[in-house]
Image 1 (tube, rainbow, N blue to C red):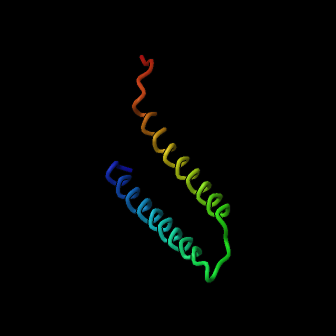
Image 2: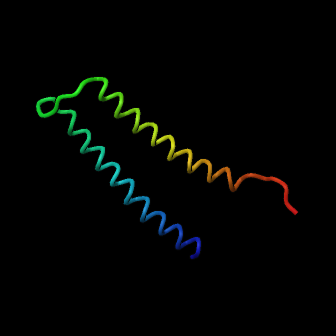
Image 3: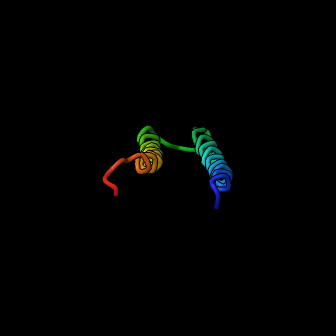
Length: 76
């Protein structure tokens, strides 16, 4: 697979996945309506703590991949 094909595949797959995440967050936002749902501040903190944790883990995976290719160690 050429870089161009890899790039095209990344753009297609990543775009679809990001859009799904955004759509799902919109659905979660709908749960904020207190006329339809009962929740408290602790629930909100727990939800967003988990979401934030997963976002940080995902970003770290990308950062690790970037630094992996930039490392200059021993070679022959």
